[in-house]
Length: 325
Image 1 (cartoon, helix red, strand yellow):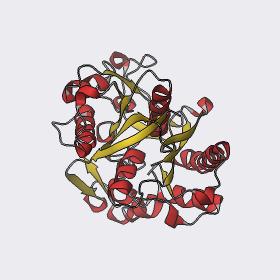
Image 2 (spheres, helix red, strand yellow; image 1 turned 90 degrees about the vertical axis):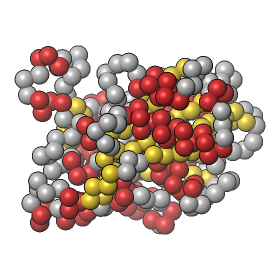
Image 3 (cartoon, helix red, strand yellow; image 1 turned 180 degrees about the vertical axis):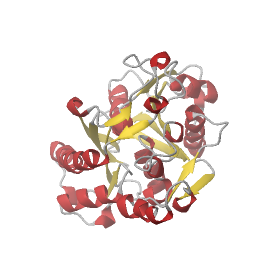
């Protein structure tokens, strides 16, 4: 049976570390709430001369260099981002150019924080179709450019970063076993950037705040707890796998209380959930891929392990993948 096997992973985090106490524009007594509400202690912020595609190229190179995989063998590059270099052309085009993978097609997807699970499912489907053998999936986000520096409800919780996965066709039992995806478009206004698109063209924006990310944190929290629990249960059930047989759960790294809540809803110990959000904050669609790379690199996840990835975010969207590493 033709499977899409994860041959390598990689990640890139900007060097600049911003700790909670560095947000001097907010009252010092309020900063303790950042850790209490989300578990975030620090995050990485890209330098002024970097853009989203630069982060993507770095993660992709780390992924390919890890196994010495030649760029000329890449059939296609999928880039998940909700903070692109520009509205157009696709950020993936710049990643392709940066890698000098001139033979590879390249395109973007955007399902905000759920983009990790959507991209995994898409790469898996393309390989299982038989039309492609080597797909590079990159998730790259630079939310520091779309956050209002005075908005306490968004600024402290996000960070910049990127991750990459190389999928290759194979016939072993490894690979993506099953994926589930979902969207509740009736809640599309809950989180997003409301300016600069066709609904509110840039030239008509009177209020520059329309270019900032806005979020109803309570609504997102409730959605994530409900849909996150549902999608984890669904992907395992449809794959015919008991939750207690899964070695590691890697959820979107948005909020420690969401992860704890989903673990409790599922009746699973937190020890089974990989967490690194305290270091990097919410890196949107890159968070699951960065966490997967760290879990593999640190041997928390080993070859043959069964891993479940799940995410939830703008759209509002949600998704999950069951993978044999």
